[in-house]
Length: 160
Image (tube, rainbow, N blue to C red; front, side, top):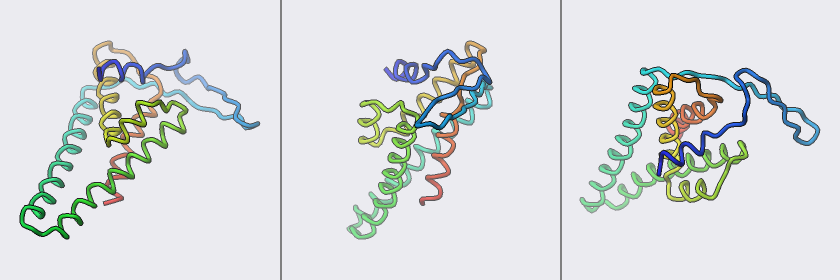
């Protein structure tokens, strides 16, 4: 299921690498360079490490607020929980905004982001793309989604 969704997310126009795409948006012509990128094994290691730290962060945050709740310190538990949920909610909003600005937002994106799974969906797309590129020894077009994943980490660190 995740592989099918990831493959559907990667459908691109038939644009060759480094070709300039022109779009007319209310009398303004936008130019976008299509960047080609061939993944390396080091990239896969980096992305798997990033996903691991994402889950470790959620796990440690959950442990902290659960310990407060179990000790009867509900104020501190709510405080710790808010530092877990608030940044996650802001990240989901940014992620939806990126889909919206790309013009690729679908109902599944709304559902995943409402369930706080939008970032996980992006990671699955990234991992699927990396493995597909490594197996086929091909370049992937339009590396913009990489920047979204990279900026997620920066946004999360800046919010905390």
